[in-house]
Image (cartoon, rainbow, N blue to C red; front, top):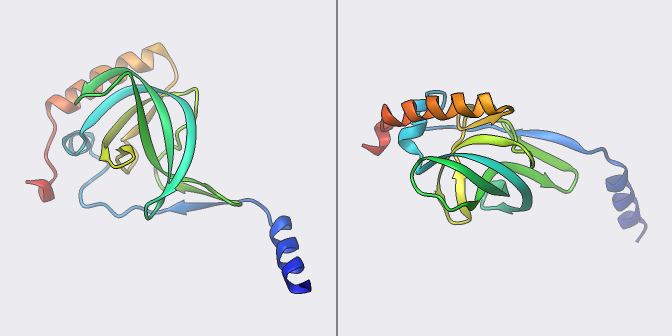
Length: 157
């Protein structure tokens, strides 16, 4: 019984830490035209809330998103988006090269269909935070161009 108490006590005293999830991709996720070619949807959306996390097999957090504008595909006015990363116990996992979604913020989100909702594509261009109306206007124009000139990743041809 003493051993259990010591282990539990050590766990309670251990600090919260952040770990990075590294991605390995089958196409260049820094090319927005390839991301647009891979994605099922590209939307401008406002993150309303973070919900539970799932591990399937990698930890991901569910976010409720109000869709402001659909640039590619079809989306309901309110959708669930998953982003790799989340908190489990005293460890927060964040996706390498991708800003974690934050409730109250508006983003461009490029995502594919998954069993828990839309799964955000990995990499730095699939999530872009938009802080002003001007940012939203520019992003909408830019992503419409990316979608119009989208390229299908080699593995999907």
